Image 1: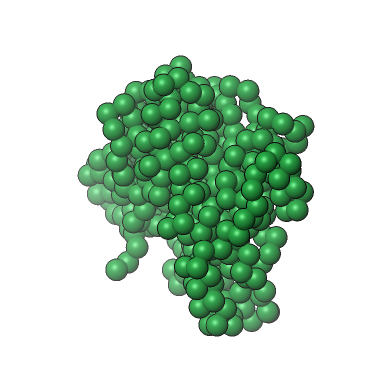
Image 2 (image 1 turned 60 degrees about the vertical axis):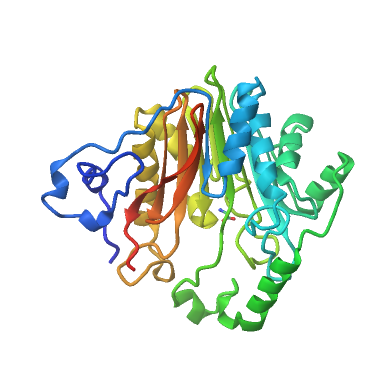
Length: 355
Ligand code: GLY
């Protein structure tokens, strides 16, 4: 049976935990742990501020630099993630991202602009290294929200994007290694495999959120998706409400990690709704992680103790600049940049990874 993670448990370990510290469910059930009912505070460093996944330190620095010069929040976060999309060393995003099972890089991205309540997204986009910029054009230059596959590519080319091969030699070699050894590790599940344990594969992504000095918010999520996926698989990153949600009255939220779990939980939307109902960012993300843990009932998705055999990280940025990030498993960090500079902070978590 899955270990049930209760709200009380989330609220149980902060007596010894500072901001950004672990919130381990290893303390579940301990009388000492249940003595306290408060979470670590969600810091509010003032505005502007930008937060991002752990691979987004440069993205948040660029976003804040642009916000300080008066740029719109959406242009700022897109300029930030463009650095990562262009970086061949980040094999989870844009150029150099790990390909699908046929060796073709397919990218997903979405953007959401708080002040205009508008959004755009692309899914399974090939050959264009900056899907976040194409998503912005879907928002601003179409009456649609999401374009996929060949149509998304044609739309990008019509807007002057240069098609190119996004598979770097490093990513091709990683894919080839996988091809040569994958046998049971693809996404085609035989009846036996559907009952077997999940074989974890990279699902890196960048999510970047920002609030400017006025309190306007925007966000972007961009990814090459699950490594070696079935061609056409779309994760949470281009799905508004899953990989990203922005509510200019309340805050913004994003997600990285196993997209299927984030889609099923409507993760980012629920984080924003939690903040609307008054939960601080830390509680808002942990509540959704708890739901994901509880809703993970398929045996192949659970470890031997009934916990999710995958990770999801959620990011929350409230309108006043307060923020938090949490993961199912310990060990993750996230990027923060405010007026005083940038740093990586530890994510809260539900479960302590055993060494
Ligand atoms: N969160 C990225 C993906 O699952 O595609």
